[in-house]
Length: 250
Image 1 (tube, rainbow, N blue to C red):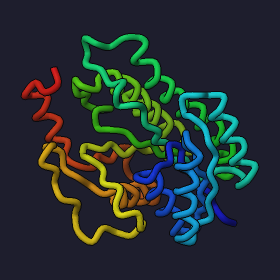
Image 2: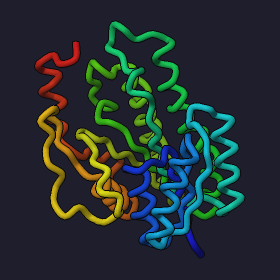
Image 3: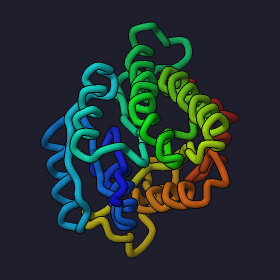
């Protein structure tokens, strides 16, 4: 029987590559993203690569809309075997600690609540099967917040705590929960969904390393199959620690 991965926050980078990586193992892909044009492009690339896929438009911060999109995907594909949750918020909403307000925290918190909405929708089917995966993507600031994105980190650290709680509560039921935390700039690749021929070049504008979305998808597949860790940091966490020591972003 075919399995299905649901990618919430699907885009041309990580979400597309995760769907394709699992698709290579026989999974169908249900994609959820804000815009239909974005979804159509992702679905087309996956189908060209031999992966059955369909898109369902919804904003992860709109909990009713998200629940409706998940319901439509479940009617199309049946129960979901793996959830990958990686929606992004507007970078213009990022704030330093002393500039945090209720208004600029709320959109990030709504995305965090979307993670709960998604898990609650797909978990019954996983429990019935006695197997499944709940995968989350975040920046490494979910562990060590950097000043320029302190409001984002508040929400993401909550999702990380949720992932750890889910892992501990569900491992006895055959369900894995884990999180990839990115300490790097993500390169989307050339759109071919193939492995990069060489590592992405460093950016002169940033000290952060550049890693491929392809390699992040590989990390997710490795975590899902081995189930031997909850967190996986990709990139260079040491750079974040050095930025904090230098007082960057104050």
